[in-house]
Image (cartoon, rainbow, N blue to C red):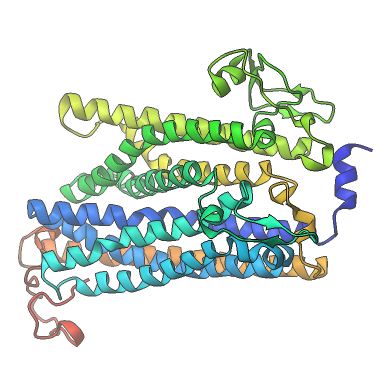
Length: 493
């Protein structure tokens, strides 16, 4: 029997459903994370542009994006809360023994969520109710609150990868906790900035992709051009930065988590002059099937020299490293992330070349087709990054201190499978509802734009400044009621 089957036989029955449940909820939540972390920043950039250039279209876009941001944040709160509960319900061994060491990260994230909710509410309320400058200034803390939330969760995760800031007593329990060392672990800096730039890049491509689809469908007015250009420019600037940061974090993993690096690069034996495999599958006997082999490249990438020694998986016993299957999963995820990132850099360079040479947006249909796909591709890259991070650390939940099997709940596996089915059904409903709400908002906005363009004012929708007076209602419409009644510039959308 192979090593993998031996390890699986020794694992408790509830380990697989617990892992599947955690993986599903995390993979679902992470779709929303780029919008939660970076969308406020993109919205405020558009808002600033509108104020600086007195551009009503930019202000209208910022206002509509803020509504989407609020709906997305509400869904993110739900999925994020589920994840927080799962840490305690599925992994009581982790939280029971190590919660006092790294739990402060979750506390920081909770406070950041609360602060961000308050700031989003103020920002939404401020349209047409506050002076333009005051409203914009009150929105400025929003990106910092989002970064604070990312700080908390990345501090916890980086500690699990490179734990420090504690000593162990005779019973193996942590004592003498140093909170600052537990937060600022060796992997925290590289992991945090790699994550933050990934969120900015992904959110930019996601938002721009919506307007790229509009361009392909013939909507090429100022509204759609601006809706595409601002987020895509932000993403295009972030793409090459992320490429450099990605190389940096890979080198950090090489030095600080050599066994994970070996899994990500499917290196079996410690050696120099190690080849690089693009994709391929690691077998139980250490051979690699398929893929593209590039001689010497792995050593060169790791240490800028073919004589660089790369630690292999066999440097540690079988029960202290990922299985061949897990290593292959981490390797494919890592390679796919790098491939997508490289393509996105090329797309950003295409955009930058056209802009610097002609001072206009690209005109190629293929560019906008690629841009429309870039948002989905960047989300896939983010998912792959987390897969490489988490699967490559196996079998440890706290690297070299606690195995995943030691942390898992004692709840029966049948109950966990049922819970997984329920959670999947609930999430399908939640994300379906989110999509329906977005489509209804889009339909309402398009209807408002058509009515305003042809309803008597003769002005395009971008001329209705969110801080200015309301456009006159068509004859026969009822007067406004509620907060906007009798007030200049009452809420129209």
